[in-house]
Image 1 (tube, rainbow, N blue to C red):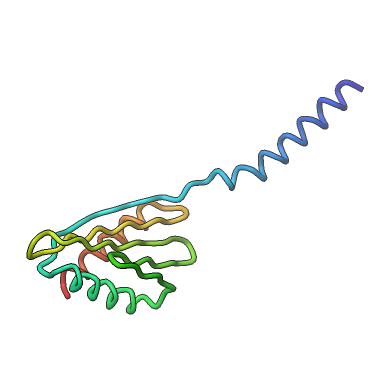
Image 2 (image 1 turned 120 degrees about the horizontal axis):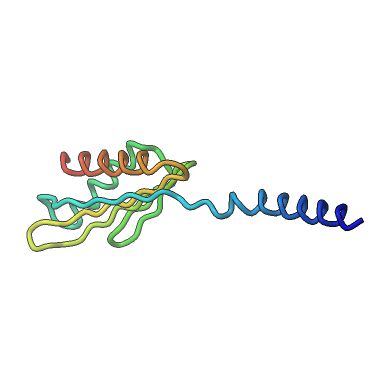
Length: 114
């Protein structure tokens, strides 16, 4: 009888742990920054063009743009630094820091070109 209770409690614990484990998964995060030869409004315009090319759902604020993919998100922030602006890009991915890092690098390259 004691063995049966022990086995049932162990099985219940294993089931609960398997349900809770996905909730403990954390997204992978990457970030990067770069000085741009434009003011903050120019930086935001570049960010808008870049995001439009991605065709994803977005939100926009006074100094930032946020985009949402099925498996991650990104945020582009633009700050004034005198005659230039600083762009900071954050990206998350549900599984891979390499995907997040690659997106950050792509975004910084594209924002530098415009």
